[in-house]
Image (cartoon, rainbow, N blue to C red):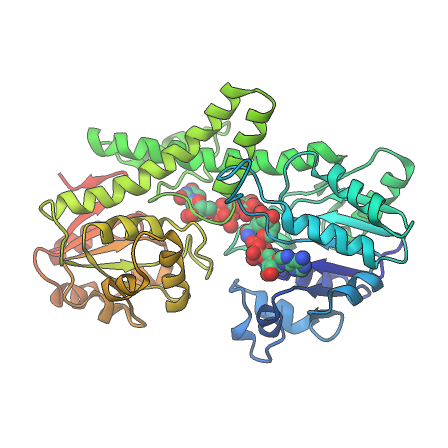
Length: 467
Ligand code: NAD
Ligand code: UGA
C-alpha cells in the first residue's frame, strides 16, 4: 500500500517535529498535523519561524521547507482524519491526577478521545499509528473502540514509539538509531507494517527499521526510557558519594564509560533529570508491574525516581546549608529553567523543585533562561500549588539579561547546561555580587578553576567544594 495522506493528532513536541521531518523527507506524501489547541496551531503557521511553539535547533529550516508544500497545520481534526490513509496519534499521555492509578498510571483519556473521533469520522480503511508513549497492551483498547464504534471500516493498529530527545529532535529524527514498528502478525497487520516501513525507508536505512509484535514495541519504549533514566540516577547516586570521598564524578564517569560494555553516554551527573517523560513513563512502568503483582520489579524501578527526587532536594539543601543555614531574604540567581539545553520545554525540570524548596526557605530568586518565557516559569510554580500566585510573583523575578539577573545576588545556581553560560564575563558578574560570592553548578559545566581565581566560592555537582 502506498501512503498518500498522513494526518497526525497532536501538534506538540513530538507531533510537530516528527511530522515536519516526514513531510520534508517524503515530498509526495501530504502531511496534516492537527490539534485541539488553536493557539498552538496558529504558532505552527506563524510566518515568523522564530515563533514556532517548539524550539528545536534546525526545526525552523525543516518547517520552512515543507510547510505549505506538503506539510499543513490545522484545527480541522475531522477533515484531516477523513482524508488520511494513515493516522498518527501523538497526543499527551500524562500521569493520572485522579482516581485509580492516581500519580502513577498514564492518563489515556486523550488517546481514547482520539480513537472515538477516528472511529466516528472514518469512511475508508485506516492505519492508526500509536506515536504517543503508551502502556503495554493499549493497542487492544484502541482496536476495541475503533471496531465497536466505527462505521464498518477496517483499522490496523501499529505501535511506532518515538525515541527523539528534545534539543536534538531534528538530528534524532533524520538519523535515528532505530525506528521501531510493532504490528499484528496477521497478513493485514504485516501489510500495514510494510506501509509504514516504506514511509521511513525514504531516509532511514532499512537495517535500522525494526519490526516486532505490538506488545514488544509498546513495552520497549517504556523500557528504553527506564534504562536511560536509571543511568542518570545511577551516576547521580555516585555524585553524592564522590562529594563525600573526594572522588570526582566526571573522572569516575569517564573511567567506567570507557568500558565498552557500559558505554560513555548518559553518564553526566546533574541536579536531576527532568522532561515530560522519564518520570511519567517509569511511574507507568511501576504501575503496570504492580498490577501484575510484580512488586519487586515495581520497587526496583521506583528507586530511580526516588533517587532523582533526592538529588534535586540535595542540591537545594546544600545551597541553604552553605549560605550559613539561611537563605531567607537572600537573592539567589538561577541560570537556566529548561529541563535541558536547547529546548524551551520545562516539564518536570529540576529547576522547578529546587526553586520551590528555596522559596519555602524564603529566598528571593531571579531566573534567567535564554528560551523560557516568564509566563511559563510562573505557570510551572503555580502548578505546584505550594503558595499563593502573588507570592510566587513577589519572591521570584524573571530577567531577560543574565548580568541583571546576577546583580546583587548572594549565590548563582546553574540549573540548565546552556552553552552560553560558559562564555559569560564572570569577572563582571563577580564584581556585582555580594561577597562571598557563591556558585552552585548543578550541571558541572563551568570552569571552576578560573571562577575560583576570580574569587568565587564554587560547588560543582559530584565534586563538591574545592577542598
Ligand atoms: P505535548 O503536550 O507537547 O503535545 C500533545 C498535543 O496533543 C497538545 O498540543 C494537545 O493539545 C494535543 N491534543 C490533545 N488531545 C487531542 C485531540 N483529541 N486531538 C488533537 N490534539 C490533541 O506532548 P508531547 O511532548 O508531544 O508528547 C506526546 C506523546 O509523545 C506523549 O505520549 C509522550 O510520552 C511521547 N513522547 C514525547 C517525547 C518528548 O520528547 N516530548 C519523546 C518521545 C515520546
Ligand atoms: C528522553 C529520551 O532520551 C528520548 O529517547 C525519549 O524519546 C524521550 O525522553 C521521551 O520519551 O520523551 P528527553 O527527555 O527529551 O528524551 O531528553 P534527555 O536527553 O533524555 O534528557 C532527560 C533529562 O536527563 C534531562 O533533564 C537531562 O538534563 C538529564 N540527563 C541526561 C542528565 O542529567 N545526564 C545525562 O547524562 C543525560
